[in-house]
Image (cartoon, rainbow, N blue to C red; front, side, top):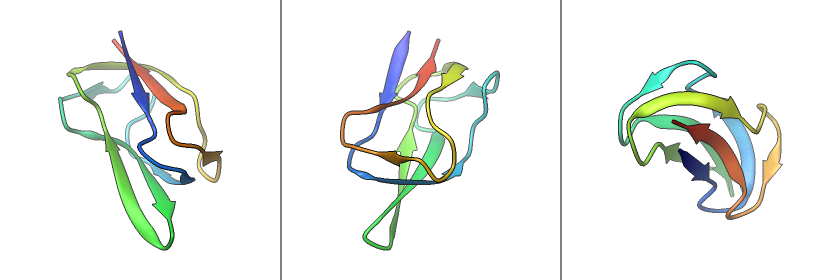
Length: 70
């Protein structure tokens, strides 16, 4: 099980992979927006998105868990 965490504080601009989706290592899970920049947050390992901990528009801090990939 891998916890995908926010690399910086920002708003969840777009969810790219939904619960139940298969993802490859390096594939984007969500895209954050911070200081008018888009920051993709990728999976660090291949697997299935078991749970999304955020919704579009949510604010996250650095280190917050975004998703669980198994």
